[in-house]
Image: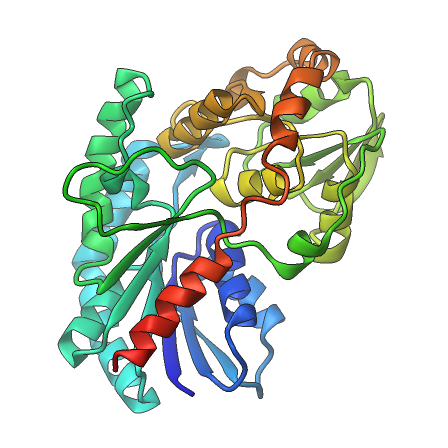
Length: 358
């Protein structure tokens, strides 16, 4: 058995869900040490309490910056530059000590910049498993030119995150051709929790909505146009508003609700899209106008025929109602992806091969 150090971006729940799935589906006996921050720290500390074979330690991390409920790109870039200038160097020094003391045989990173640099100094092999590397490796020719430009621009930041990876694995619900020079990349679907894989899809008479905490009130109000009850996650438990009920995040309840819903109306994160497709659920995505990655995800979903999208800032009751009324062709397309999304066995194979080569 081996000792594996893992780091991940703390923003949102997608990275944490991917890492939790990977850790829980590794063969028993490995010792795991996870480094993360923010939302992921809270989720993984709860999932892996102290005293077991999985340790979770807090590090500083980069977070998206919001102004008036909208992604603030200039502030987010400024925060990233400040993090790189003032925090990254000392954090790498700390991780060199922590990882050496742990005695790691292998490291895995999900879009976190410090552990790759520490591993390079220690000579520890690194496996990069994330979604963001699609910006560098994937042929994005089907996208509007503005999003292709954004992808090219953002790819420079991705390059800074995981330098020196021995293996690069891209986890995405879409799989276009690889660019020339990137043929070494391993393309997999999202890493799915065992509960998602085991869930039995049903066609219920309600919608599920997962929204980010900065969602404007106008978008929440738009859900009332669905003509069906809507079970809303991501905004915390609160009193119902008409057909909308609001629920605290509970993994088992959310998965059961997702498996039984008629459709998903959601923020446009890669992980949740992959989970919904695995369950054959059509989607109306609500990407933020300024969030290029969400927009890219939305365009690929449309190309797959399994859903549509509307900007979060412009969604209305009428738009949600139109989606629900016309959901049949999206549902038919989504059914073709049912049971076909799980990329976990493939990434476990990459890790096994890398450990065997020690």
